[in-house]
Amino acid sequence: MNVYLDHSATTYVDEDVLEAMMPYFHDHFGNASSQHTLGQEAMNAVDRAREAVAKAINARPSEIYFTSGGTESDNWAIKGIAHAYASKGKHIITSAVEHHAVLHTCEQLTKEGYEVTYVPVHPSGEVDLDALKAAIRPDTVLITVMYANNEIGTIQPIEEIGRIAKEHKIFFHTDAVQAMGVCDIDVKAQNIDLLSMSAHKFYGPKGVGVLYIRNGVKPDKLIIGGAQERSMRGGTYNTPGIVGCAAALTKAVAHREENNAKIAALRDYFVEQVKARIPYIVINGGFEHRLPNNANISFLYVEGESILLSLDLEGIQASSGSACSSGSLDPSHVLLATGLPVENAHGSIRFSFGKDNTKEQVDYTLEVLERTIARLREWSPLYADLKKSKEN
Amino acid sequence: MAYSQKLMEIFRNPKNVGELPDANAVGRVGNASCGDILELYLKIENNIIVDAKFRTFGCASAIASSSVATEIIKGKTVEEALALTNDDIVKELDGLPAQKIHCSVLASEAIALAIQNYREGTDGASQEEKMV
Ligand SMILES: Cc1ncc(COP(=O)(O)O)c(C=O)c1O
Ligand SMILES: [Zn+2]
Image 1 (cartoon, helix red, strand yellow):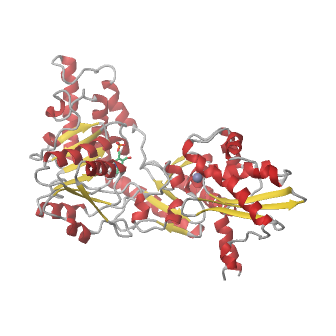
Image 2 (cartoon, helix red, strand yellow; image 1 turned 180 degrees about the horizontal axis):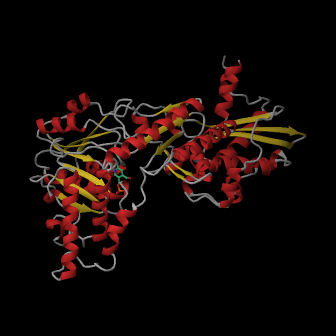
Image 3 (cartoon, rainbow over the protein chains, first blue to last red; image 1 turned 90 degrees about the horizontal axis):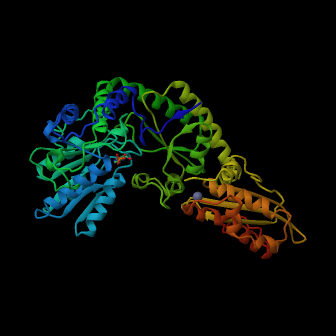
């Protein structure tokens, strides 16, 4: 059986979305900036896509900018605001659990003389709002806090952060890459000035995303070139990608509640069963404000990559926060920020469910997982220590 | 990541996993915070390693290199086992991704430590037990 449980890494392109995109690869291949009919057809498609994306977050079409994805949107928002408003101040507030697209961009800015405060999170993964408020200084220009976390699924108190930012006249950017099509997003009600999204996380194509920029907010440009995107972002319009992004978001929003309910039920069943069947586990992150699709579990006394590869050998794809699978020597900064000891972080696995997963797949995964953990524990000197200490 | 087929085959079916009740040389290297731990058990008779087993907490390359190392040193003299290098192990695995080399060095380190414990006459049981 093949079971994909890595939807937070990426999703496949939904069949309807693919169908919507297809005409723009071949028959309607025009450059949306061309004056002739082929070009104007493409521009019409881009315009319709822009309207659809705007509608999904209660923005205006003029506030929607298409980009190459979440990473570019995050870079643009953060560097763009920092540079454009440097005369106002050079202090940025973010959280300890951001995606590297945000964290490394902030680190880059510190090399240019900016100061960054990384607000800690509670064990649930939610940012400490008191610490966030306390971090605000007269020279703070930007608060950037993700909408929902990619590793543990924690949904941040975005409305409160929006209110705090507005009160202090600080720009507020949110990386909503994991939240699109899942959370009910209203940029006006939530006082969001800039918002990043990425189509491949909601059954759209890879390499296309959006930055929403509230009218009146003027970040510096990131990608300089032609007059595309109202001269704010150069580069020939990726018409099929843009059309796919909008079609995917529209579909995701239309089926949001039913998909959320179905996915949460599967996820909850999975977590309950893991708890009942496998000893010595830690469920990472809180469950009160969490994406319906995310389960992040540490299996103590075993290492994440060996779990991941064992599952993969049996057709199950998930993801690990262990150092050895990430290619760096450090385990997940997100898990460590929630207070998880390093040892436990090494054995963590993220299971992220999708709209087409079934109960049969979950049952199969549980069976393989139970067997895999037992086997790897038999190989583990740490588990042997545990057993010996129990005998004594 | 790109592990070799051979490594994946060994990871799927590692040899010599488990404890050796009559081991007279034991070495444990690595620690839980760095992500890999290898405990090696050797039975040495007349300077020959007559049996070798291991337990490993770690990634696929740590587990596979433990398996390969125990296979190689069985039947070898103590000196021959000490001469085993990390390169030999990596070669036996048909190569390793660069960031994974550090996981495989545990094997040669464990051999050295187990033999050192043997020569010093300590059984290599975990230090905690001795520190009452
Ligand atoms: C929270 C978050 N931000 C940003 C990104 C980067 O998006 P993209 O892959 O479109 O560059 C991801 C995806 O990996 C993500 O999960
Ligand atoms: Zn390793």
